[in-house]
Image 1 (cartoon, one colour):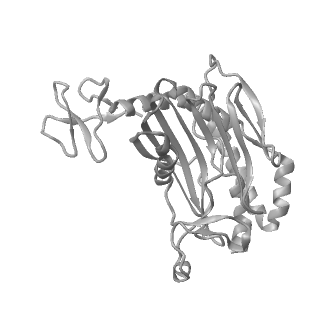
Image 2 (tube, helix red, strand yellow):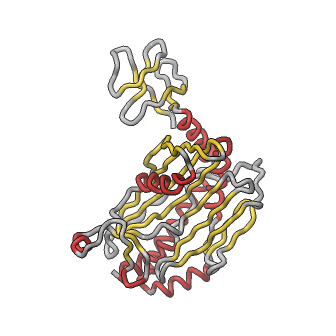
Image 3 (spheres, rainbow, N blue to C red):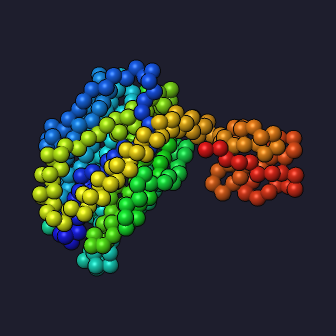
Length: 332
């Protein structure tokens, strides 16, 4: 177990990376300033000037350091979080652990090098909703899941399993109607660390409806600027020992791929903001096969499709409602 955690520790440290879209538009009024981890000078990140920013590197054991940056707007209405120090490494409930009396939710600290929790693997989209309920439930009178979907992971690690997903909510708060969002990736590691899994990407925000797009862009921009100190990397590798070299090499490869992905997706934050708006309004954007035009129609729901007849009438149904109906084409 100790050897497994040695290999995992680099991944634990860097359980945060550039997320899934591009930089802020050039006309943004946000002014960026630097924020540095004060605990171990492990990283720097750009944050909006005038916002309340807390966070840094939180160490729960020699092989269990976690990054979190929490940002709140000056008016207190928008909160954005990169990573989360409360999210531990997870250890599936194996037959051996079960026979010894362990159950899901129990704290587990093998050899004292990490403070984990016993929990079976959750795919990224499942974790995103579980995290969203826990994070936003206490501040929302009625937390309503508006969109929940699986995404392609930013980078698929060699071996193991990586999954990704996101959850979008409508929220009735004391300050009025808000929107909440979570993006998460989870990874289950291959031997010799088989079974141990972690949240390797995590970004979230809650904001007033009219500020949703800006909150998304700020989260993505800040994530893209997070830079880990070379000196701190070297120190952590000495703690890891030689067994961490392979994990560190994989991390460097992943970071390069993520940065390339970020640069190629400069327009995605705008299109995702539009997707958020449609999800909140309960409509889908689809192509009418009769006229060839893109149209907004009431959301079909899981397992249901949009169908159009010759007059352009739209019907939602899991199967073809009639011989004169043709399936609409989803517009991404």
